[in-house]
Image (tube, rainbow, N blue to C red; front, side, top):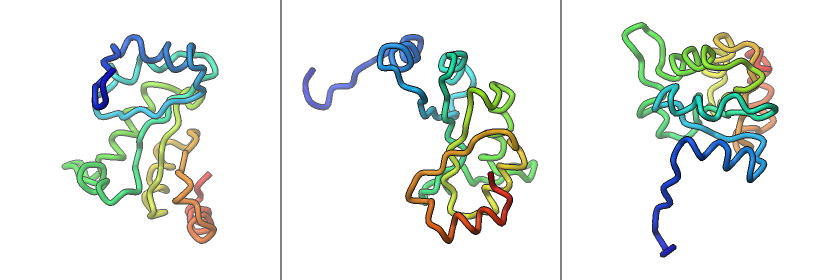
Length: 136
């Protein structure tokens, strides 16, 4: 394949490729195309879907932190919808937010789900601050 070529893999093939052939334990999936794009990755025994809940990059303000008419943020709506797709035994959330109050809002929505915070986020000061926000 030439440099810069795009490899087109059908969505129906991807979960088996990663979970069975490559033996991945977890995959990060973007939720913004909806359930039909996430569902093929669910249902594999002892495998996890790590759904982007709220990222810590400045660009997260472009979409994830939009305030909806309901008064909730888009990231809260995403988490609320996603927990109806799968239980905590199959689904976890990226919560790379640098603001503990945002993580606390997600924790209220998904109290039993595991949160994955990228390592750049986990300094001692931030971890202690998140702990005060009752983050598990």
